[in-house]
Length: 576
Image (tube, rainbow, N blue to C red; front, side):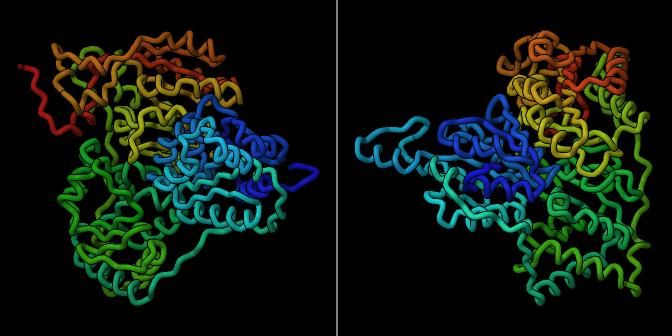
């Protein structure tokens, strides 16, 4: 903190520290220099200087998911526009983030108006940044003066922690350095919106009627439960109802997965058969906090009328919708019904939790059945999950994923800890996972294990050097098959036939990953077969290194995981 003048930048930093933001991701710039200089002097928040904007903002996204709020400081225009994709992902997937920037100041604007000067990093519209970020934030502000700055900053931060989504704040370049009053020592709190009691009662009555008449009800939980701190309430509903439950891919690890009612994650056709069968046979879904994407079209088309749905934006029972009812109030009122119910013992209806089957062998590509030492997607997870189980490592790690074949296969994992599966399952961004590793580890204080496709890793490999710079010992597994396999699956699945050919745009360049790891200063291992993979896993367990590790996992170009084959509507025909 500056010793002379307490500034607008100091005010924001103090508020962030009160909200447990102890690291702030940054890209430098001249417009934002006053904020940057204040950050350098501020005690209690470490500056994390990253390689590029996506590196910074993917990290901030994952930090927000694990810590409850994050912040990233970006240069005007060239930097904010580069980060837009990552902020959009945080917006879609409900990760609270403060995007901080600065614009040309008052003097610059006067010169620009007088001489028709186009300032660097500007499109000519000095409002463009905020106008664009209005589409991917829940609140935005550009401060032209320090007058009223404290109140506006508080309002933005409250919006971020209330809605669990990004906000955008910029200042004229000089304003970050202008004097400002100090904030109160009481940290900001989310706004609590209460339901309309009549609407709440009507919604719960209708929900109770539908649940009571169901013969095979179950719970379908989503990520909003986790983001809004309602996991304990969800657990109480599970205990009181006796219902089994599943989650979306994005909502995976909304609770510890060792609970006696968790049947596995529902990722539509990529799910294990047991989960698909339970969903198919269920006649009522208590759907809580779910973000329903087009990954779940079968579910929507076949189970829409069977849903009791409560999210932050909608309360619906079958085809009836209810305005003025919050998800939390609805869940609390429904829990009370379950706890007070004596006349209708719903617990007797609830099916028992099935024994979770071994999901990997049956989903591994049969082309490699006679080559048991070849690493396939499913064999990678089979051995890696066994290693984590056997060594009781789930308490100390989290997994990060962008959209890739590996992410869909990984949804079959059973036994992870709460909030330890961090993915771009809704926004579906290739490359998210490698940048997210830094923020996930700093935010959770658990080691991040990232499983990246080689195409995704190539997009943002510089993140590895940021991990090295700050001695963050994350592990990056690169599934190295030299193709965009997930893209090819949905373009033409016959390419995976023995005589099939990938489209030219799906072929990737060949990289020397071990040389890359050395160049960045990271540890590097290569696993060419199952035996080598198990040796690498053991080395990772016993390593005392404070550097990140890059592991190249060699898999066949045409390995087609069963989960991915099931996801595509195409019928594979290798006899053409």
